[in-house]
Amino acid sequence: MEMLKIKKLRDNAVVPKRATGGSAGMDLYACIDEAVTVKPHECVKIPTGIAIALPSALYGAFIFARSGLSINHGLAPANCVGVVDSDYRGEVIVGLVNQFNEPYTVEPGERVAQMVIMPVSLMDVIECDILDETERGDGGFGSTGKK
Image 1 (cartoon, rainbow, N blue to C red):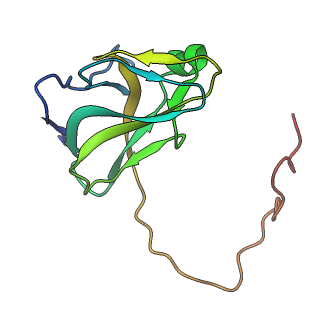
Image 2: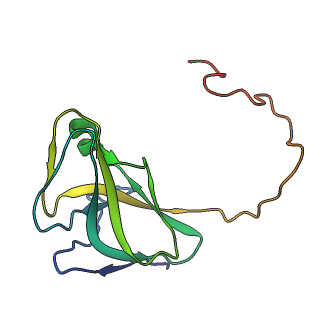
C-alpha cells in the first residue's frame, strides 16, 4: 500500500486529517503563533508546519479551499488550487486571499484549506502542426450554450 509521509516541522503543527470517513481532502491547519488578520483583498501566506513526501511522481497534492471558509468568509487559495509536486520537500504553505470586503482573522490551529492527493499523468509532449478534428473544434467560452 502506498503511503503519504508527513513530517512535522514545528511542535505546534497538526498532522492533516480527514474530517469524516468520506472526506476526499485532509484538512490543513494554520501553524502560526498568533492570529493573522487578512484584510479585504489581501493575500497572505499561512504556514502549515508540515512537509510531505508523496509515494511517487504519479501523484500530486492539490490544495483546495475549505468550502465554509470560502463561502462564508471569502478566504480561498490565492492561486485557486495549489499544487505540491512529488519531489517538493519544503513546508506546505497555503496562500490565502480574502475576496470579501471585511477582514478575517485566522487563528492558530484553524483549518485553512484541504489537501487532496490525486494521480497525475506524466505524458510525453510532442509538437505537431495539425490536431485532430472534433465536433466542437475551437469553440470556447460559452460556445456550447448555457443549458
